[in-house]
Length: 377
Image (cartoon, rainbow, N blue to C red; front, top):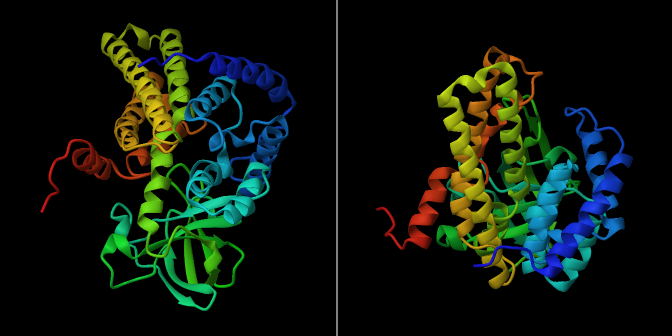
C-alpha cells in the first residue's frame, strides 16, 4: 500500500503550512485552563478562523487522508487543539454527516463549522461505562417529543455545551443492543442539571448530567428509533479511528523533547533510559503508520473508519502512558512539581486506557470482529 502523499495531498499540505504560519502569530493569548467559558470562547474563535479560511470542514467533508494531514500539520505548527469543539467536530458532526437527514445536517453542521455551538457526549452512565449497552436512561415517546429521565457521567464539556449527543433506551423489552436510540439534546432544555467533575489533574472537562423529564423533539433523533447502537458504532469508529491523529504527532514531539532534556540533565547516560526512548520512538512510528493504514481503509470504505481503530486505540493508550512514565524518569524529583512540563500530562494519560472504550473492550472487539474468535460465555 502506497502511504505517500498524492499530488493533491501534497498541495493541500503545502498550502496549509503556509496559512498556519501566517494565522498563528495573530492569535490572542490562551485563557487560563480552569476558565472554561474563556476556553470555550477561545476554541470557538479558532474554529471561526478556520471556517473563514476554508479549513473548517476537513473533519467530515474532506477525505480521511486530508483530515489526517490537517491534524498532523496543525499539531506540528502548534495550532490550538479542538478543545471544547472536540465532540462536535470529531464525534457528533461526522456522525450526523454520515447518518443524519438533510434537514439535520443543515441544522447542526454549519454552526459547528462556524464555531457557534459546542457539543458534549452523553454516553456513559454510573452503571454503564465499559458495558455501554447496559445504559438505563429512559426515553418514552409523548407526541412529537421523547421524555428523557436518567443520568450520565463523564460527559465531556457539558458545562459549556449547547447540544448533547445522547444515548437513551427507548425499548426496555428489546435485547440490550436493539432498544437504544441516538438523540441530539439541547442543553438548555428544562430538567437538565450539570455537576462538573474534577479530575486527578485538576481539570473539569467532565461532568455528571441529571435528566428529569427532559423533552427532546423526535425530529432530533439521528437514525431510526431503537437503531441507536448501530449509529453509536459509527460515532465510536470516528472517536477511535482518526480523532487521535494529532495526539500521535504530539507524542512524537514530546519524545524528541524528552531526549533533549535527558541529554541536558545527565539522564541520557543511563542505557536503560535510552533503550526506553528508542523503543517508544519505534512504537509511535508504528502507530503513525497504523493510522495511515486506517485512514486508507476508511477512504476505501466510504469515509467511516473501521474496526482497525480499536487496534490503534488499544496500543496508543498504553504507549502514551509509557511515554509519560518515561518523562517522570527523565525529570526525576521534578516529576512531583505540577508546574513542570509533562507532569499534568502524566496524570491525564492514566485515563486513556479507559476513555473512548476501555482496553478490555478494545481487546474484545479485536478478538471477535477482526480475528473471528468466539465470544466468552
